[in-house]
Image (cartoon, rainbow, N blue to C red; front, side, top):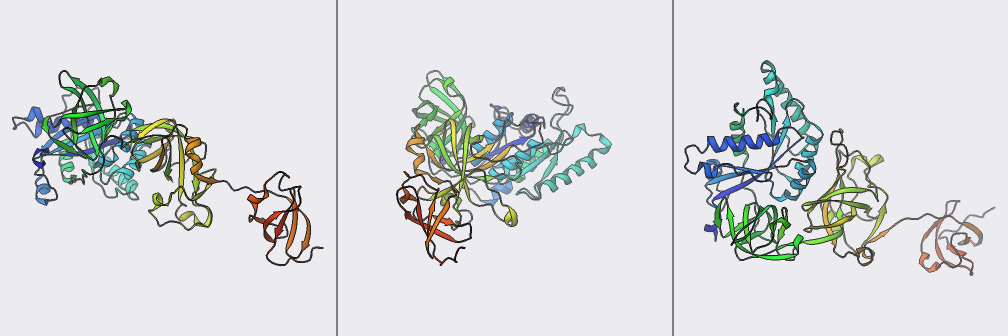
Length: 520
């Protein structure tokens, strides 16, 4: 089957940056520069040129020799296609990057050289750290700098960016200056983009053979859908996990239907199969394309539609707001962003903590957890230490379809986009989904979360050195058996445990392990 796979390596670049940093102009400049500069001599240049497609633009270059010589790949690649995932609106940026996190191979952070790092730039960095191993920073709009000060301004901004990045996983990443659209978006196209050819060379140097795994269930993000009369309906998109072959049956969960794969195209050529990371057009048996403009396609039965979920929870350090139980957050999970009410919980005091990194493994329905009014951050003497393990119950306003263990991010996307505040609040992995609409009755009772309560009563009398009779803690109809063994502290400092009831009026007997001093 290997001969039928494409000879083009698809390398996915997430194009991120603050609004108006020139992401779209840069994607356009890269595509057009590549198609004219690299392929004028090639008869297929026009065919191989630009494919602009709903936020995805792509361009193809010859497969870099150093990469070919590295031998770190199974397929005999001839071409390298860069697919630029350009996300216009910020909520869609978060959705796209998180949803496609498994297949973003390189992040290209676009920074306005005049304005520098802005709020969304910082948010993009956070998303990048969660999802992506490599990054290139592009200083755009250098044409707006006065010519006599341009070089020094670029050097100053480069230094400042390296300072910003020194505590991130992108320390020492390359920074390059360009002018993707000299004169601004309204200017005529007469002026050539500056620095874009150099950027393409840098991207080629940064390219590596991504780890692509054909195993496991298929998950494909569809970004466009149309029908071809007499053939069927074509879905274009990116395979996020697993693989796909002709005659496979796939499920469209949003429509609750399964369809048979009739043909597959990659780079406008028919292939018999495709795998994780590939961009494909998949023709299936007919359905109305208007019903699925965007969405997910998967192996039948592999995705779950959940009304609530348990996730591991970790606060994002730059978020300055509070993380409180019963608060509502935008939750991005799978390819959807939906509001959810959050309940935080953690391990009871004195519980041995799991090994670092085994947070997901630590969650189990047969364990008891402590209810938390707020997410607990390191405080006091331990503030420098790690935060305690914590989880969150998410109760969605509408059901969401997503795979188990997918990344979940909680945000306050309704915060003013221009406010200088990070809106990404917490992140985690989806550990369990409640698929029943009546989960509050059928599923939540399995989740053992308790609250600590503090009640006060009075000592009625001391019967001997080890026994005290108490009152005014329980009503007379209370079943005292469920409180036997609970700890009691006297105002004089002694501690004991409830042994049982005393009489019929709600009084109770306390056993003190050490003999008490004589009370006067």
